[in-house]
Length: 464
Image (cartoon, rainbow, N blue to C red; front, side, top):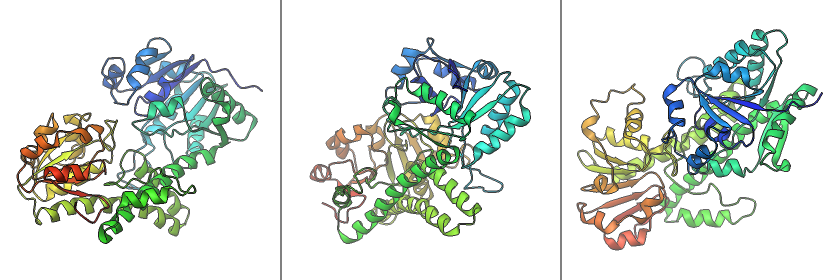
């Protein structure tokens, strides 16, 4: 046998993974399908549904040529040689494994739809983050519902994108990982997908492994990155207690070539759709495999992250003379990191909820996150009534509006614009003493202190 030539690709799911990933594929016809009409309309407009530096230029250059967006899921499936499944796999909120296991409802629905619609053989590619051996369940569904003469080969092709640099990551990836069954058919399918990527990725950066190794590698990579963040955040608490400086400690540690400097920046904690979800997946997997010590280890990474967020929020309260009731607090940044509009698991949400429990008045500013998204986060997508908290929340269009009259300014996202604000003008409109809490270690402490602010930073035990 020889690998098929992939001429048409369908991607099920037009979200943070499916949209950018498929937008960069050259030469091959790619159709991204989604049942959400509003989302597809946005992809076909000048206002894309997600913010990612460079994405708009890529989409505009290829849309209508080899890149298409549609709600006709069945046609996309029927026409494709290869299908990426890039649907959401959130953490379960109820039932067995609630709070830890991935909810594979959407993935299983997409798989079932592929089997029902396909009239020819397909390569089906897991793009969503999934627990190890999910491909087994997908294969069972496909084989149980397939038509005579239809064959499905399943591959794992996890994404390793970092939001904010996703387009650069896609054009020049550290590696592309493809997992397959080690059968003749599985290896042929693997070669077919490798040929797609080889249009722009050097062959030596395309790694081919077993199916289960590929699935686990995605969880392992995110868990180990998050582990580094929690480790440096744990050290930041020690620095604050001893008078050491976490930036200096991290710099010294990062100079060790065995360690490197990446992911050693202390902060209010990690967020995003992947880190916490993937670690909790590992916790659930470890427990289901009767490895309680392993589960406990990975759970501690998440627990430390929650501790860092609550510790930072408590520091604000303690510094403002043990009460923030009725006081105006400016929260700068709502996205979980700069250069994205994604707010999933953002530390700003947890910190703001702490402030709400203290009955503070909170003004929020973020350059990319919409007001409607902020209210979805504040109400936990409708699970929390909005009316009781509305008197305590103001969402502002400018930093100056958010900070005017604030007794504390709390930086929760490392947006570059916060580094170059007119801090003298902001100080002039703040009551005294005026506090700045730098949760991202991005501000010039000495400059702000010279202006008159009292500056408190993560990982430093002194105020200069």
